[in-house]
View: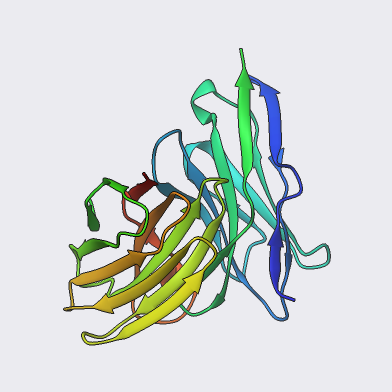
Length: 112
Length: 116
């Protein structure tokens, strides 16, 4: 079945440390992949998107993600986390035109 | 620039009562409009995508029944009935065409529903 899995429900990192949030997808074909962020008491904002090409895509606020077809993954990374990155991060795949299927989200906590 | 307006932004819903939500599109370059629900556990789920005025769809999910209507090129409505658990409903829009640039969904601010 086609799906998106975020295996880590919660991740805690220290401010200034590096970050990786994991996303695995199951899809027959080449998917369009996205990372969205939801800050506390806010809606969803796009961080970055992937379409076939360079496997490393750059997003806003220093985020990047790497697509791996062999691993069926689209992990999100940041070199140095800031306290303002405290949020829930969602990986999503576009399986059908205009429809996004979301992972269960990873709640990021940033410690001082 | 805000692409979508949603109203109301929040609503207390007596058990057994239906509620009507509106979403207004501010930019006609993104004519594909959709509804997503986010449950209390933060799970996001696609509900409907409606393109043309007059399009209607219904769906029943655990905790609520839905009726979506594309009223005009700029207005999308959602009726939520038989809601037993709170949730947030997001309206989204996307552009016409193919490829990731057109698959991207832009989210509205959401409408938070709480069951009384």
